[in-house]
Image 1 (cartoon, one colour):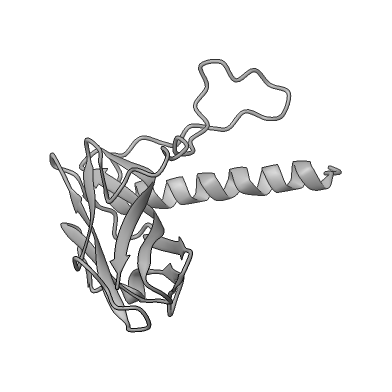
Image 2: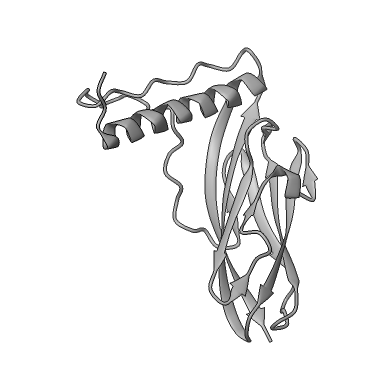
Length: 178
């Protein structure tokens, strides 16, 4: 089989998505349904699930909730320019759902006028990592006074006894800096 660069990338993304979905399902037990298959290039896609999570909604502000989760940020009322500050990001399950411990929970950070010791936080950097609750304490240093916008893109998976669902949400935080 000969692949062009675009086709090869799409093929690799498809298989990586299927592998992640399969690992999420395996981590939740044998009763979980098998992931849907992705149609090949040129095949009809009407009514076919790709097995990948739906695109993440636009940034939701300092919190985001779904039927299976609550994702909430917290922090101080104000921070001091040039001094290390911290805000929190907490993920909890709702309605019988829990955090998938095998799926790679990741927080990716960006913002203008602030610096992060690490712009990507993974399980090892979590202050708490349990099925009921995952919490990240996010250190940052603001460079100057004024309101700073920080975006935190959070990737995670939620499970119940029969299903696991990968999720991605972007929180937008406004940090007051003196």
